[in-house]
Length: 399
Ligand code: GLV
Ligand code: MN
Ligand code: MN
Image (tube, rainbow, N blue to C red):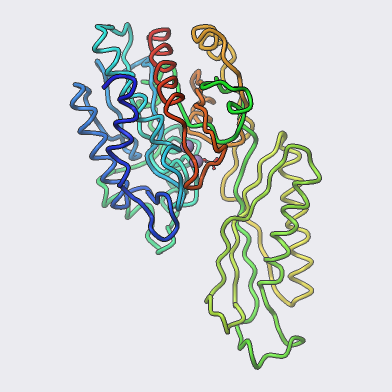
């Protein structure tokens, strides 16, 4: 494995979790594809002489040297959104393995423990809460709350965790204390580096972001026999929510609001739904803007629901305040890399969760399409190589 080793590793997993219907990849925590990737990661890390363990929250650690304390940790995640791209998550994992191998080959001896980590359920695509593994580990999400989460098929997280031999999940002060500094390399999820014509950037901030569940209940009925005046159709307030989300975000500079998942029950072409669930994702520069957007949408949905004889509820599922990555670490990496662009992002990351506890930095790698969470996502070969070079440099600087 040289710096092209990251590309070789990506090639090895290119067929795992391909989604023929959606395009791209569907790799959800503890599904067959994600389990295959975990096994592949362990085998690859062990070939480098790293000692692999899985913590009580399903995060996988590959240790170069004795485990912590005060370790330099790098890595990312192997799960994806439904129909996601190839690099959101895996690029950070393969780049970490390639960087460790390069340093080993060069005879580098780290002065502190180094670990490559794979965090569990970063996307929250199965159980609804993004960065589930790092939130549990750091105590940002309680074990009780996690235990009550269910996937789309109704499986409880507690049962799935037990089947995956996790034992008792929850805050893991010992695992957290082993992390002295965390650096996550990630494909850029926008066009910042394309516009700047540079392969690698250092991260500065992550927008405030959260997820809310909107449920609208009406009366299921027959699409042909139910007069319009007699309907209580929850799809109308749900449709209003979609439009209100765009309007509310557009009114606040730099804000984003999205409904990317809408589930009518029972979901028949000739059936007026009895209930519609929609998931709202909002991101903004400030907590005020984020909360105002949600409040505006919720008020509009309540009004639209009342007009249709329906009932609506809006429940917060997760919230993360704005993240500013450690400025001293950011500047140190920037100068070790010879001065690279410093970019903010609207995407959430495990690095954002850990930033509340330990000095944390991110490296972003150019993505020519600027597209992410879709099959067209991907860093170009030159940028992947530059990303590994940057991570090697970061490890040399910090370890
Ligand atoms: C994760 O990629 C997110 O920003 O939702
Ligand atoms: Mn993602
Ligand atoms: Mn990611």
